Image (cartoon, rainbow, N blue to C red; front, side, top):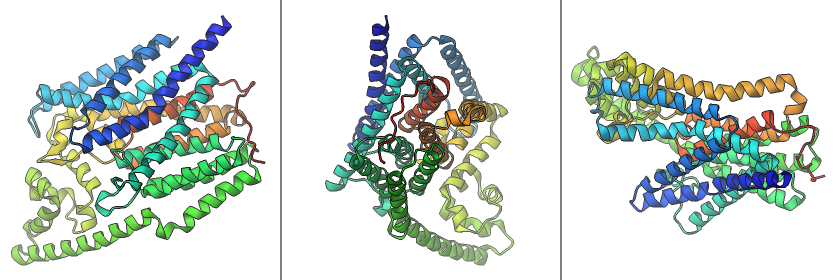
Length: 484
């Protein structure tokens, strides 16, 4: 019986490993399908099949099937409420909510639903596989990081790197489809991989892996990936100090790499991008000043028409949709190019103004995803939390907040109950990964509504749950560090 249970655990651990290691390959396939003009339909279909298969396996393996049924019921109610709200708003301020629109809209809903589905399934898999599953995930994360690094290297050598900022030829992105999602994935991966590497017996393998971890973030060029360097380095140092496991070699390695990244700030890809952004911002303000002066000359300083030239230059589609006077009021008559040219603010303003025209049901259950496009310009907001609020209303936002708060409260209660027991090096790595995932969700639209990044966030949440709810700390399985 015990042998059969061990075999079962090993099988589930292998399933977890395979689910994890195929992720970067799906991302590369998605990139090339899109690059060659075939779109991402195939890879989306593969991800949907993977989601369904994982959900079925999780349900069958779970000893708490009621949790799955409750989750499905909540998702079904949210989807039904969303469709009802979209039908009520159909054609009022956007497109008709016909069958085609409903299909696209619900497909986007499934992307969001992946987070709780995958998280619950991974929790089941880890509970059933124990430390075998935990170790399988750690190995998979290391494999994934090196696969991503290899893809980036090959793309750079072959001259096919699409760049993180394509219009400026800055940042080593590799064959990956969406830069913000990839930034989130790397920022969640690196703390987990670094924690595993610091426990290896081979010092030089650890050094190489640590250099790859920090180098891949430095070269990526986003501000958040650069932030992840120091969050990971100093966060890891603090965690290992608290656990009395910090050795001179570990401290020296982390500090040298962090100092090197900090010392090269002025020549980093991230800084080069920000320099160009600032230069471009100055040019935009000069353009804004000229257009405003022209407006004053033509219409007078007391007329709202004085804003027309500037607002039509920076916000032509918004002026067409909502009218000049309403838009000027929404922007409080701003004459700053940094405000009018801010894509994030423009999209938030678009969604807010659309909601003002729709029934109250849209506030509760959200907007039609198809209405985020207006004359070939996409107005889907550029951060996930606002995106959930506008796309799925108060109800959807409350459900997502409750789901994430469950894990945050779980962490806080565990630390309050027994800080020494639960604040391990593994827990610290998962905490840093979770923090970086949530920061990306707050600052970008690259996590909660992107299947590839959602997968990793789901995994991190499940790992945290495992450390608190399942791991037997009286018989710890962690390998002690050997970098003495």
